[in-house]
Image (cartoon, rainbow, N blue to C red; front, top):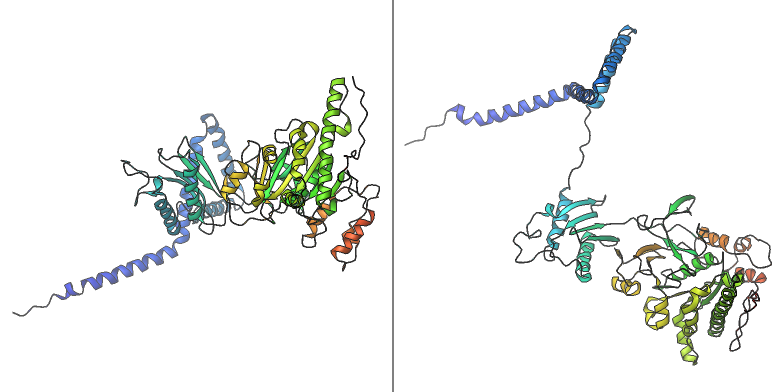
Length: 555
């Protein structure tokens, strides 16, 4: 039996309907384009009406009468002014058009790429934040990540800058190893090459990960606003300390957050130890401390590495000696030990006799020792005592005698430091790239951020005694005779350096020297007026310091 064809209306109906829909859609789009200004004005009038009604409802009843009178007076004035109604109509239409304009929609959630990143991060945390017998786990494969990630933020490159995670109460957040695993995972999944700060709230079972802003590396050596006995080691995050100081950052003056180290008789951390990799900035830190110490005290500098990084300090006012050889270092440290004992004796006699402590005893004395491990190796090879052994008296009794010891060495030479040095240097600094375990071993506590693999010179962490671990950026304090350093930083160091004794203020020697002069020529130019301050001869009795002590009658 042959099939009968369908009626024409049934076979061509779908095509007609499709064409009709297209025609209607085109007509609607055209009408929308033509009537778009009118639609915008109507939307603006509606928004203006809603805003006016809200303000009228918020107006107290006793003020509605004066407002009505003022509105009526304005309407009457507009009506009486020539072309007033037309101008008022144009003004209202303009305000409605501005109010009803289309605005860029505000982003209220993550896009597809950000959602995929958050979901991947959630799945990576499941093995650490879940157990098999949990009846309602917060973290489960294929679960809802929005329940655990309460807050998040991304930068322009789509990388996380802030993340708040709610984790189950049974997670052992009190164990350092468990926290380190989570921090390592978040650091890996969120992107390497940046510092991440982790704040654990054990009571609320929350973890907040943030990316701190980079510390400024353009702050150079200068005279900081500090009280006597205070030394600025560097600068840290604004929310880490409660104090700011005005500093010159390039061509502007800003308020920076300093890490202030207090020394003297009332200090609980009278001595400092700085460690780091080669080129990490430990020498820069010692040079910065020396420039600040010379403002109110005397300085002894011992360059164990023998690199000549402290040649600019030689002969300056307040610099008692700058030694780099083993014999000179031993003689200088022997004198420092006898000077510490002398200060203790004279201070004790003065207090027992009811006299004020002599000024030369109260004047701070700083012993700056760079690379003591190298000197210890040379001393052992030569059969002589380790220079660190001569630091026992200054380290043990330096706080009462006004003597401060600062040591700096490479991080792989920590085993060469004596027990006395490790015990009495309670202010610790770690500069340069270092693992989390190395930083913890030096500072005695974990850093508050995850250290990146590469950092600029002078960047690291600091901990004063039992205080918190802070990020640190040492002020740029290069050798002023180093041609590789920036000219503005070299000039900043020269501006802070004390004058040579008995010499009138002179301009920068490096600027006065010929343009084609080498570094050795400029050093020879500077050494013309440099006078060495004598210290005790090697193997002989300790001599008197640069300032003779005042005589104090006994009893």
